[in-house]
View 1 (cartoon, rainbow, N blue to C red):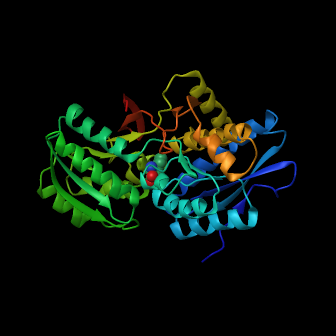
View 2 (cartoon, rainbow, N blue to C red):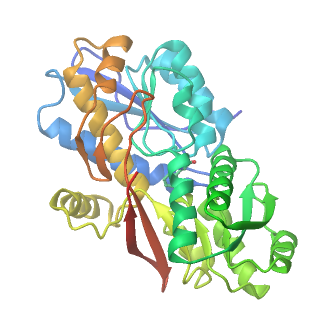
View 3 (cartoon, protein in one colour):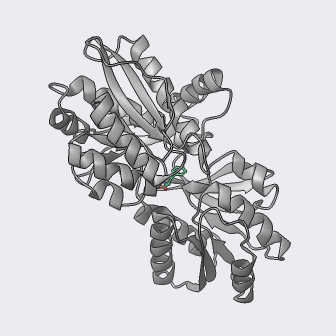
Length: 365
Ligand code: PHE
């Protein structure tokens, strides 16, 4: 396998605390890694400008996993054995975080995923944390929205059968939507990276759904949306956080107008700390932060607060400090970690129109 790229960071020395980061900086979901990198970078710069942690500066060694789980696992091993980082941040896609969590847990190095929502990630063990909600909640949110707000009775699902995230969300959505009295007309599958979805979309069209749930990542969803419209499927598509990318609109054009997805955050949140984050992020990186950027920032902030509080920089001490995170004011919601090391937070529903997203409503746990 190719050697992952490394950027940023600095050698560990007595004046530096070295953290690790693994992200999809290139490959199919590159906006996930780049946004997360920016969010983490902003948090670290702020912390260092404010004097660092325990009198030391913080540095981050970053590896690109090219949007692939095998590379994510290798990069994690490298961070642990060669770089000897004290804590690891990443990944976004759940399949990648699952591969990382295995390694971090067995080495006893704390890991915080900013945005992986599949429940199994933190089930890998007591060193693995996340600062976002989990998919049993996210799937419920969209099922409820489909039934109560869209008044949908019949929904089809198109899932990515190569992604732990997509499979997990499909399960929950299917169960919840059915419990709420709705009917799933058909469940079709694709494998990430496919480019022709017409056979599945044609099968879906025959079942006359009132909406289609597509819990995939933006790179596939953009193409799916276009092909759905070409085939005359005009009903709204619905999705989860995996849609969140400015690239979605480049791929889909107007094909997603009138569609909805659940997400972790809305840039329309008027709260001063959110608006300050957005202004600082724009000044630094030239774009409005997406959910990954916001969660990357929050994950790094939670990490920094835990490093400050930990009695020393050993794995168990840092793990215990992260575990005590309570009422932490994040830009993507307030973070309290439960006993399963997950954050319990509300979700935002966003509507797409004219190639941008609009805040619709918040759903609380
Ligand atoms: N929640 C997705 C996953 O677990 C990743 C994701 C998070 C994508 C936030 C976009 C925004 O795979």
